[in-house]
Amino acid sequence: MTIDTGINTPDVIVVGGGTGGYSTALRAAGLGLDVTLVERDKVGGTCLHRGCIPSKAMLHAAELVDGIAEARERWGVKATVDSVDWGALVATRDDIVARNHKGVEAHLAHAGVRVVRGSARLTGARTVRVESAGTESAPGVQDLTARRALVLATGSRPRTLPGLDPDGRRVVTSDDALFAPGLPASVLVLGGGAIGAEYASFHRSMGAEVTLVEAADRIVPLEDADVSRHLTRGLKKRGIDVQAGARLLDAELLENGVRARVRTARGETRTVTAERLLVAVGRAPVTEGLGLDAAGLTTDERGFVVPEDWGRLETAVPGVHVVGDLLPPPSLGLAHASFAEGLLVAETVAGLESPPVDYAAVPRVTYSSPQTASVGLSEAEARARGHEVDVGTMPLTAVAKGMVHGQGGMVKVVAEAGGGQVLGVHLVGPNVSEMIAESQLIVGWDAEPSDVARHVHAHPTLSEAVGEVFLTLAGRGLHQQ
Ligand SMILES: Cc1cc2nc3c(=O)[nH]c(=O)nc-3n(C[C@H](O)[C@H](O)[C@H](O)COP(=O)(O)OP(=O)(O)OC[C@H]3O[C@@H](n4cnc5c(N)ncnc54)[C@H](O)[C@@H]3O)c2cc1C
Image 1 (cartoon, rainbow, N blue to C red):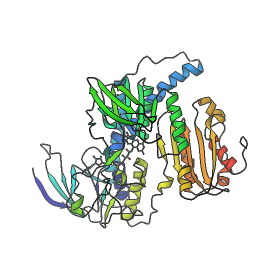
Image 2: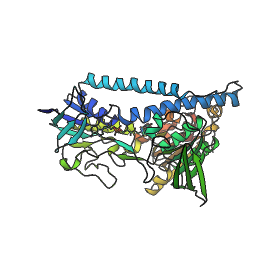
Image 3: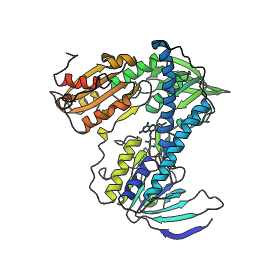
Image 4: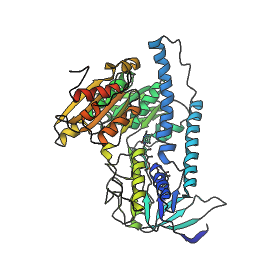
């Protein structure tokens, strides 16, 4: 192995090239800083290669399959799905990922960001040693020193459960599920958060028998209780066996699957046999081998790197910042939150005054069928924080476009009582991921229902239901008392 003794001294070193890292690098370079980004795998990180993009590509294919069933059952279209060619689906998905990957690489090159391939380990507060994978042509070690800032963006990986080691075939994580050789006929999904709900929904659309087990008393437990209720109803209607308040007792590996015992909320023990057990019990921050102690940094008991100053996302060690999935709540473990964090850190390092990330106004989406999308406080959170609230709700089927879609769903708005500030908006139904944008502005701009009620929604649209709820909360409802 050759040692490169020349010390590289960029203004900013970013460790990790996922959405948090590359957004920091691009913005910092755009502000005239000399940036080196260290990535041991592929720029784009989890979101592009194993998360948001491939999963949403697959969920798009799932929507098409569901659409054919709806076309036949509701619209007289004489069509059936013969089969799904998993290889062709994967090829389209991977082509989308590859094109995005090229795009990210091109943006970084165009911005003048130097990308160093290899694994970074901190050797001091602003110094990093990068060991490359060591090809014949380019083995080596590089030592880098950041003149202004070091940004940690090493992200997260799937959590697993003790005694339930993924083997990539029968017991899988969300990473393995992407690269499986085929579609299973039956799946037991463990974990009813966004990733679990999305994978349960996908496999059901592809014809699998699906059981979804969540230990909390409701799926998507971080969302408003009405969101959980409507999502549960929607998934059950599609034939998914949703078991909330349930626990996996044990799982036995079979030749071609697993046999698991599940204790249901009613205290019954059920045996579920499935070709695949998908473990989706959350994500763990990645800090192993990163050398945090050499920089004087520690993690909290869950492994997150906690900023001392959330307004600058700066740790207790001056000049060391953190973005993305390495951050604990109130950060959200979402790609778009990490984009906002990257912008904030880059601007802060460049000496600009940027407002902190307003996490309460960051939208959260589950891309299952039906989808959920929300921003701001749930009704329970608002009450727990001492707000007196007015709540407006409307089923999506109360507007014509909701009837056209025929998939149920709802709008729920939580506002300070007496016409005060909108605190939260919660949507369930088709396409609500595309409908949440107006609500994030409503919540982010501290609007009141009367501010929103002044604006006219297009007819016929699903978002008319959002407009209707605000009209009602402002005392001007057409269709509600
Ligand atoms: C199945 C799934 C679906 C998801 N869907 C969505 C969604 O729809 N919308 C959404 O907003 N979010 C979604 N997410 C979450 C999203 O992917 C993450 O929030 C986001 O990727 C976090 O970005 P990050 O930059 O913090 O970390 P990552 O994307 O994990 O990137 C970290 C990078 O650091 C590199 N690295 C780690 N250690 C080192 C080291 N020592 N040296 C060099 N490089 C290193 C890794 O190789 C990696 O590329 C999803 C996640 C999953 C798993």
